[in-house]
Amino acid sequence: MSPNEPSEQATNTFPSGFLWGAATSSYQVEGAVREDGRQPSIWDTFTVERGMDSGETACDHYHRWPADADLMAQLGMNAYRFSLAWPRIVPDGTGAVNRAGLAHYDRMVDGLLERGITPVPTLYHWDLPQALQDRGGWTNRGTTDAFAAYTEVCLDALGDRVDTWLTVNEPWVVSVLGYRLGLHAPGERDLRTSLLVAHHLLLAHGVATQRIRERRPTARVGIPLSLFPNYPVTDDPADAAAAWGSDGYTNRWFLDPVLRGRYPADTVELFERLVGPMDWVQPGDLDLIGARPDLIGVNYYTRRRISAAPTDGLPWRVLPAQAGVPVTDSGWEDVPEVFYDLLVRLYRDYDVPLLITENGGVWNAEPDPDGRVRDTGRVHALREHLLALSRAVDDGAQVLGYLHWSLLDNLEWAEGYTQRFGLVHVDRATQRRTLKDSAHYYAAVIAANQVVDATDDVAGKP
Ligand code: FCB
Image: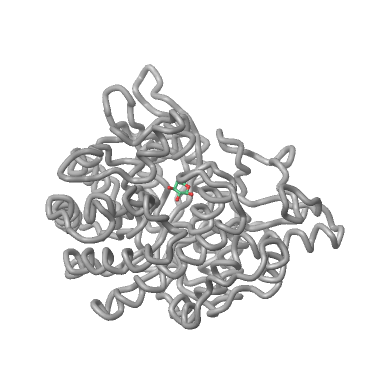
């Protein structure tokens, strides 16, 4: 049965104490890149080198966070996922702590708590201090030691008020887009390097987890993973095998070490055939990486359609959207039933609590002459994904909360400001915020703790 057809048992409700909120990351929203002692990150460098849109101003959230937090409270949100900018807190990557940078997050955490919003910080959402990149960045194992020290600084400053910590956002995207495909900072293109970096990112998660458990034993810790379910395009066993191979590459390469303490054997075999032995894995690494987290952060957007055809050195091909399947304005298939399948699979295969740390899509609606932003596609997708989520919960998945990507229209990395993911529209020229129809709809769901109908009345509240 499709997750979106309510069954007799479907309640369309959520557990009590469910976290409802939205997510952002420092470089994508803050701006103020030269303020209060912040030093450049690899994304400042990369966007200049490539002549891309940068986070120089972004949503000016560094200054406007109190008003943005008011909006969250107005929508009834009780959680906010944001990231701490390493180049604000330890601007050279190691050594001196920048008290002014830390004070910003200290105030923000207090401000969120005052509004009844649980802060859910991510320690690393891609803005590596450039000073560390100059010493090899994530290819240098020493960067994991620097990350451990930076984590301790964050824990000492905020740990008395933060009870849920997220470590390293999406190691797959960092390693593959940053080091194999050259699309993200720092723009390298080499499979072996990308695997080395993936290991160091996992190790960084492991050492941060260890530090959090030492210093804040009652806190929860998790890693947000980009999880792309892989579907074979035909019934041909070769396509099924290719999809399983691609699943090893995108999903199990991270889930298995974190939750089972080992890399998946089939994927190890493939990679070692392609790049030689993974001699960067040292004794004890997988014990650190495999110390079970309290939760997995699920970042879910779409699926991958896979056929068996060697492409760019890997034994599968990723196909574009299937004809007839709805897509977002960035061309990603909008497939809520895949979200259901993913959550149930995570429950079945790994039996770990989940926090939805990202889910959303691009719909580029602009304000109509009456000022209303009718992002009907997002309203519909949000409703369908929440129905799928609620059904997964009914069927046994333990889900702690849902954090929509994103609160604000923001800098979508290499895509710049061309893709609007926000519940809140941000006017690039004026920074004016406008609650979209989807924000009003989301507020109605939060108030009911239940998936409600998307009537024009609910969505279009002024
Ligand atoms: C994820 C990133 C997030 C955002 C969304 C659209 O991969 O974690 O920063 O860019 O995609």
